[in-house]
Image 1 (cartoon, rainbow, N blue to C red):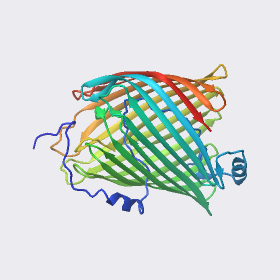
Image 2 (cartoon, one colour):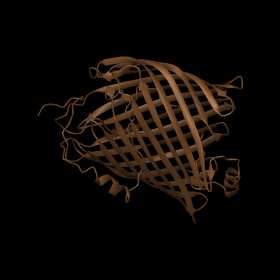
Image 3 (cartoon, rainbow, N blue to C red):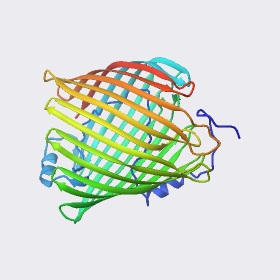
Image 4 (cartoon, rainbow, N blue to C red):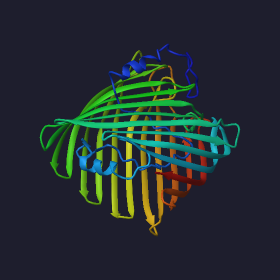
Length: 426
């Protein structure tokens, strides 16, 4: 059999697509989605959501204080029906983009307009639901206009010494992707069911079941189910650590499926009021089913440092390394990501956000008859300057430059985007 190159299309392995909804009822999991590299600049978080649950420094979940909830629901809310509060939000962006990949080796320029109307629902004391569609229009008719969707549901509750959390999200998009070199239709379903139990004031247990389902037109689909458990110990009020172990299974509709095991350790340290540090590191051991390829042993890690020297300045550094399913048959990707973000308030009214990121994607063969020796080095820089508009709006200008250096012919890319955006939230 000939080696399958990165751009190959595939024939189905006759997996039953309808199986995944049945599995969702018994195995609820959080996303292990791969590090996708969209060519279009990501939209900002326009809505400051007030989640009903949040993570504490000990990696447990805490439910809002009833007094705080009573205050929140007593505010003057015109879109309030019993325990439900609706908060509409809207974002409009207009920008010019250069170098968008239409197909491998073919980059185009275009003017883009985006409309993103949405609504966030606070449902009682335990749930939030947000729906945000995005309509994207290209002046270059070689690209097809998009109707993307984003839905997320989160909630939590407490029972005796347990705290349970649930999240479900759905994202559909047709944006140009750097990894595929073309406009790519895909849908991602992510589910998580978590539980935290406090043995005492020092020791706690975190449990998690996660599911990530990715359906991509003309490319590989993946179904990822996993679990991860952590035993935590709080050494002092601002420092805790934990050890964890987990396992997962990845079903793909082309090529060999995958079983993997993970072991890791983590620390969470708030060194001072102005600085915090979270680090986890471990090993993932992946075995490919019905394949002569040996096991893939990969160091994995995640790190986040946040520093706020003064109220108007916030600096953050993030890095991670993970193994993820690939868009392409008989391959997985090892992704190493690093990013830097500076958020600075200027002259009381302006807000400047600068972000730089670097992503190394290495393609690894999961079966012997596949040639997977390509690497992508993706880098990006973005700047956004915003100013309040009237009472509830925001006016901003933004710029992004991004590029990809690939060892695979046709996938090297560089482009820029510049434009304006107007946001509103109630």
